[in-house]
Image (cartoon, rainbow over all chains, first blue to last red; front, side):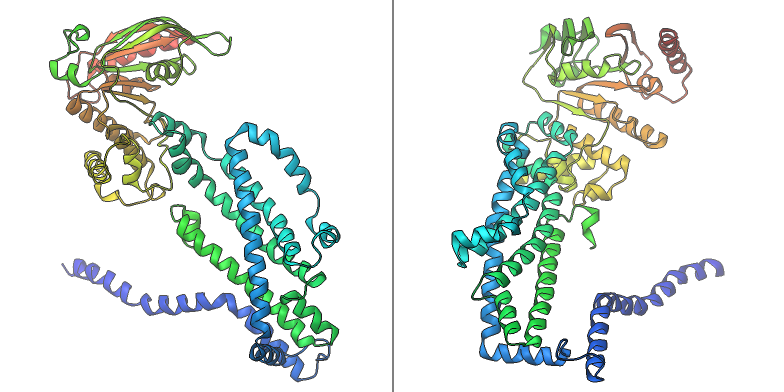
Length: 278
Length: 256
């Protein structure tokens, strides 16, 4: 009797004890990824304030923040940010859309694949940034040049991963769908596309990296607006703080794009245990 | 009525629900290779539970696929009574859509012209029959192997098929789960009266579940025995054990 009472009381006690601990560890877990960046910035500020590094080449974080505030007040910062964002987004949508289209077409149709895959693979092996001189000749430094380069860079990871995703859909599931009376359309929407989606997302995340890289290179070389242009202008006038500000904004934008993709993955792939708690 | 195909040993109820099968001179070879099925004759009365056993590669799965119309015969013909009725197959693997919840996976087995609310009601209904009502909203990844196979069974049954083909559906399950599943399939078969064809490696399983056992060797029927032990059958029944021994002897003899 006494034993059973003790046993009954055990779960209650065990639950009561770890609860606060679990809460604090959750908060700590949330902040943990930001610990390293914070330490770097604090150390950097300390080194600059103590005169360990020359602020002529490496401005202190507070100076960078001040530069950001200054540019924000003039509106220059947001204007350039918006221009870069619009270029990145439209280039991504165009290139990604075409990549998705060819990936689906070539994954679903042998004929389409035989017709286009070899050509696409050949174009793929040309580094797209090597086209910059040609693109400047064609488009000058207008918007088309940046759109073209971003779209080209984004196209291949999405194309290749969509194709791979469709190829690797479990043939047993496709057979099941057929046996259970699905027509081609149903088979596509209910079996093939959801099966290919994890791989498409891998392509999207990879493409996002290439998107920023291409845009920044294109903007530093040939542009009259945008973040890359802002950084190049600052270099001309030795405004190191603005250059560093631009670089930090890239880092932040990259992180935001990645977080958005992760959220989208969690929403679309919640069936997959691998994506449920990332 | 399907009177022409109704055989004396099946009750009226069974003959109405199940699908009768008549196979004459059936042969199948793949792309000029040797015949997998050789001029096979077989009559399965509506509502019968037939087990097909044989060594790997003897053609038993091909026979099942031919009956279901998943393969075209090279020669001969297969006639099904009440031809337009639903035929369903349960595979060795559950083959559930990982991105569809359990109830939606079951609804895959329903005809497309059934309304949404009705689909859900019928899916939940049949999930209850396999004892998984509370799992309706879960992802397949959260289920155990035995539970997934039960969902696959529910998907096969939800359209009330007249023929259920079972292609070694319990081969990957552990011994206890397998025995439970055997009992469940037997119970549902008795209640619904469809024709069942079970392809299996496990002679004990065949003997425990079937009305009739076919041993296939090199694409032909080597042995065709009725199991007239009344149901419910008890595991370890001497009559079943004797029959199992007889069939195993036959299988081992030809292998030596």
